[in-house]
Image (tube, rainbow, N blue to C red; front, side):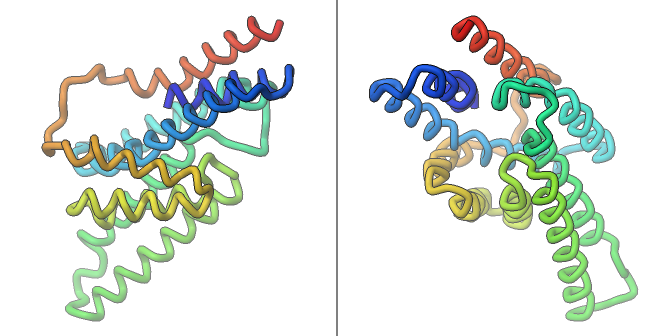
Length: 227
């Protein structure tokens, strides 16, 4: 993610200010291609986080808070102005996706207990489809990072959570429809294949804070480079 954002928040602005130079162009492409690995990993961690969360409401609240906090450095880093209403940061995509799969999980576990067999399966499927379409439409209207395809990728990973490599492959296949560059997202299969189902040691808030903090830092670095 950091490499991807160095390309998008610094090199791209250098190109625009000074004209593209072939060596920098190559570096830019490499950074953006490697960065494609990040989003499927975020989605995988999101679905695993829901599975192991004791309080889905708090999980949603954390994402909402950091979506708001991250919007200022996101706008500044990638568009150079605040506010920039035409694009919203990836936390909003993750938030909408999490809300959708939380509701789907609740429906699957407890909706319409009086219904049995095929009738209940169809009922749950229809409700779940409605949730997916609603979240996808909201992401599209808000123009969040990865937009509606990001929501579809999250829901696909959730539905295939018991088969993480298949889920990751489908997730990446969906993202390719946004850009052929997303083909490189398949590199996320390597770390996901090594997952042992256990949570490792990590600072509780590190990854939440890192996203807005590194975007703000990249913006400041670009300001110093361009004057």
